[in-house]
Figure (cartoon, one colour):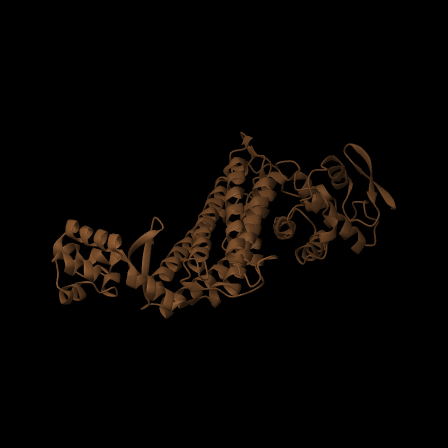
Length: 463
């Protein structure tokens, strides 16, 4: 491999000749040989938006020339477009402020500009990575700003649309099976009737609430600490920089970001990210239940519950011929479990650091972006390859409903709890129908039983 020599405040460093990063990035590659995870590309590209907004604000305030501004804008556009992705080799597991990644961005942009201007990479001409690209900024305020841009973008453009698609299919199933009465279950035991449509409607309602929680959480993320520099005081910025930079971020993203009123809070703590992670965990909890309910309802096909049929996507066993498993539900369950684990890491990360700086920023953003990705991918796959193809097994549903002892609950207002319980116990003990047990005990005639025990009426208020 061929190298060039670049310099930083600690001296000379060998840098691969074909890379646009510089001395500080090369040091970070050597000093953080930890794990396989790299900084998420969502952060790198969000940084492009931050650098673009900062140089526009600095130019507007008369702090940087038009020529340098235009160079930075051109290189930042390439960064945003993903054209420079190969120049970001640093491990995710680096300093807790993300300083190495911020400098990686600064160096790549400066060296790309050197190329554009006909200068050698590493010359720091015509722009300097610190003095120009990082003007009015610190890693401490730019990294959490990039975190917010990355997360809000992934939630709004990726996860929320997938959740909306899932909710739509759940609502379609609710409507399709609105009148199909089945046995309800509590404690995994027979309970009073419910329709299959009501089951799906409950899932849709849960998802609707979670979707709103996600949307609500974004308003806290949209308060950006950019302009706070090192500790939130705005050192080395010109008054009004933060508001101008955020204005340009909004022009780029078409989102309603605001400059945080207290930038120290946005640098020292990341409560908004902890809050969002909690909502993602709530979504995971719902999806875990949906996955497990799917597995139970589809169990069988002959020796389980078997009230629904799921698509046959692939053979389910290497030894049992003809077996089909609820693999999409299992994948969804596992993704949900990982999201719950990620939230634990985010909670630790949110409480980490002292005084004016949180020092677990890479940890927090890695886990949150992974959670968003896992939820989106798993839900999309489950929706397309399982939920849409679910069909009711009406014969099985009707068979269970006919033999359900808990239909006796409809008799509570008529003959009282104790007599109704006696009917159920007799029917179970003698393996007879509820009607035969009720008539045998002399509590009701057959006609009276049929009048009061109507499964469909039991799925709604009936007094």
